[in-house]
Image (tube, rainbow, N blue to C red):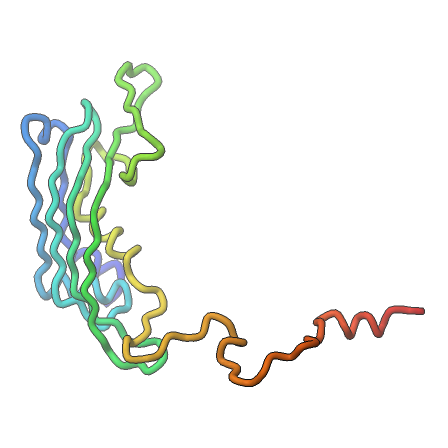
Length: 183
């Protein structure tokens, strides 16, 4: 399955700011088995047994939305060392703000606090795709170097694995250059 055909299998969930003006919209996105398989194929995973997004989307001003929720997914990685599959449960908070592109003539300015905990994305054709935001959040939450939990952690430094005594006079990497210096 190619990434393009796998993307076509994933649902979209479009919300317009005017739909959330009166009351927040509650989102409950749960992928079925076929959709989980497509998402796993896109990211090169062994599998995804569940993918659930529960969120609340509310209007923020006239032309913006804020989404708050949680993404919960059960992912099966393939260990990069042993190639054995292992499962991990992901619990990731969703804090996303969608803003409309403003024309210079518009008087409706949207204030975005740079210290705010929300990620900011633009509305596309006046709509926010909440499902796409969940897929992007999922992608950034994946471990790029999966390692089976039964393996001991790799040493932070090559010297950490050395059990002998430390050399009191370590050789400088520039020692060879010093010998080449004309005298």
